[in-house]
Length: 166
Image 1: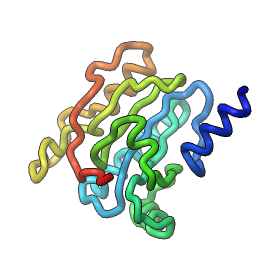
Image 2 (image 1 turned 45 degrees about the horizontal axis):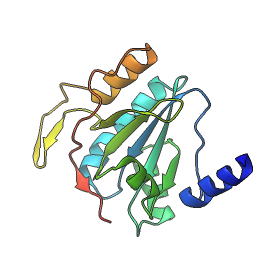
Image 3 (image 1 turned 90 degrees about the horizontal axis):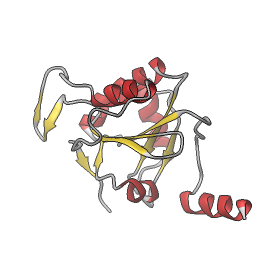
Image 4 (image 1 turned 180 degrees about the vertical axis):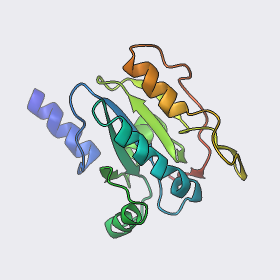
């Protein structure tokens, strides 16, 4: 039974570029190479990943159907990203977590329970409107609370960015 379930899981998700470490929190960042907000925010997530690397695994998810692996590698290089990534052209992860926008993060517990979903921070608070620097760091607040065994202060925020087209 276990082998069949694992085989089905791999068939549904397709090729996997990264495996989360057992017992760790996990952050999925849905991002896009062409979205200006992603270009601004993704390096911040890289810094968070470095800060929390012992307790949290981070992974970038590229949901754009026509995106090529070479474009992702170029984006990763251009923005000095070392985070593992996967392509999600058929939107399996997009649908599973009901993600609508890039950038949007999903913080998962070790047993895959969604602890937080939404914006990384509040710098971009509506399309075309942003602060020079964020005032609230939603993802970091959720990470700190989760790692301390506390409830996440805000479990959901509306992500602002580029819509994911089906």
